[in-house]
Structure formats: structure tokens, C-alpha cells
Amino acid sequence: MQQITEQSEINFQSEQYKDAYSRINGIVIEGEQEAYDNYIQLAQLLPDSKDELIRLSKMENRHKKGFEACGRNLQVEPDLEFAKDFFSELHGNFQTAAAAGNVVTCLLIQSLIIECFAIAAYNIYIPVADDFARKITEGVVKDEYSHLNFGEEWLKANFAESKAELEAANRQNLPIVWKMLNRVADDAEVLAMEKDALVEDFMIQYGEALSNIGFSTRDIMRLSAYGLKA
Ligand code: Y39
Ligand code: FE
Ligand code: FE
Ligand code: FE
Image 1 (cartoon, rainbow, N blue to C red):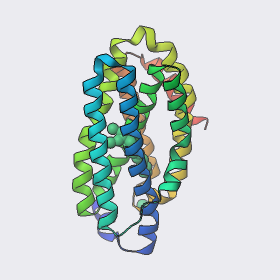
Image 2 (spheres, rainbow, N blue to C red):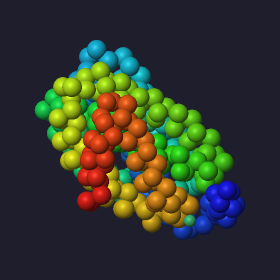
Image 3 (cartoon, protein in one colour):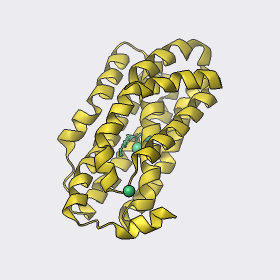
Image 4 (cartoon, rainbow, N blue to C red):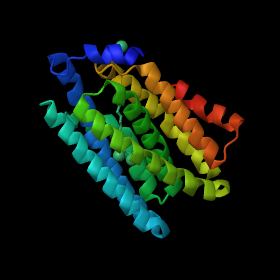
């Protein structure tokens, strides 16, 4: 496939690659750190699932260490300041929801939106990654599917009571994902990650998740359309 050709053309040591990598690596390190924090907060909000959520938080901490090693391997300094700003809107919405006890919104933000974003990004990255980062990312993406699955199962079990809050949280947060994707598209392209492929993979994961939770095809179309207006 085309990716094989592209991969052989990638110079992981070029200044252009390392410059773009400093921001993308910063995003994944900060993202994993925030995911760790979010699962600890979710453990407090959902005492019945506390042990499971603490287990997920520990996986996020391992992911962070793995991606820090990827940056070191390429001699790249992650741009964590950029990354904090990159996540600030979703971060703020999660904190507001957590403070209000809106656990459904917290789950939509972390376990659906952010996990689907991670799965899409890691799936698209794996074929074009350097050998070291590919091995790390292959291990990480398997875990991310299990995190998405936690959110799906909980929301499926509580679908009727969660539906209205999910709709509102989707409307509030999905447009933010498109802004984030647009913001990172040029750097992703330098890493041979195509924006169209990221969007496609995200929409497939997110649509499947909404379907597994109990939304109809018609609902999924309507919910997905909020992103497009960003
Ligand atoms: O659950 C998780 O581990 C998610 C926090 C990690 C988010 C990773 C976000 C990846 C976006 C990278 C964008 C590259 C195009
Ligand atoms: Fe993770
Ligand atoms: Fe995760
Ligand atoms: Fe390309």
C-alpha cells in the first residue's frame, strides 16, 4: 500500500520532522497525563467502578511513559505548553462537569471522544511510525479500545437516563474535536498522517460507540453533524 512507500521516504531525523514531532509528542504525553487524571476523578464519581477505573488510570500513566520514551528516542523535546493549550477546552469542560457531578458528560468527553481521538490517531500513526514508536503505539492502542469499551458499557447500561445529557455533551464537545484536528493537521501531515484518514477513523470509532450504547442510525447521523459546523 501507499503507506509503505511513504514510510520509506520519512526522515525521522530531519528538522521538519522533529519540529512537528515536538508538538504531536507533547499532545500525546499531555493527553495521557490528562486521561490519567480524568480516570482518577471518574473513580471518585463512580464508586462501584472504582477499582476498574483506577486500573485504567494506571494504564494511562504507562502510556505517558511510553510516549516520553518515543520523544527521547528521536531526541525531541515535547512541547507541553502547546499541548496544555491544545487540550484546554476539553479539559475545562471535563472539570466543570466533574465539579457538577455530571458523570455522563465526563464519560462522553474522556471515554468516548478522547479515546476515539486517540484510537484514530494511533491507528493512523502506526504504519508511518519509526520502529521504536510503532511497537510502543501498538501496545497502547489495544488499551485504548478497552477504555472506550468501559465508557460504552457504562453508558449502555444507563442509556435511558443518560440520553439527554449525552446529546447535550456531544453538542458541546464534538465541535471542539474538529478544531483540535484542524489545529494539528499540518504537523500530522509532516508525520505522514493524513487529516482525511484521521477524520474517517474518528467518525467510524465514534459512530460505532454511539451505536453500541444504544443510539439509532438516525440519532448517530444527527449527533455526528455537530462536528461539521466547527
Ligand atoms: O485515553 C487516552 O489515552 C487519550 C489521552 C490520549 C489522547 C491522545 C490524543 C492523540 C491526538 C494526537 C493527534 C495527532 C494527529
Ligand atoms: Fe492512553
Ligand atoms: Fe485511554
Ligand atoms: Fe502525505
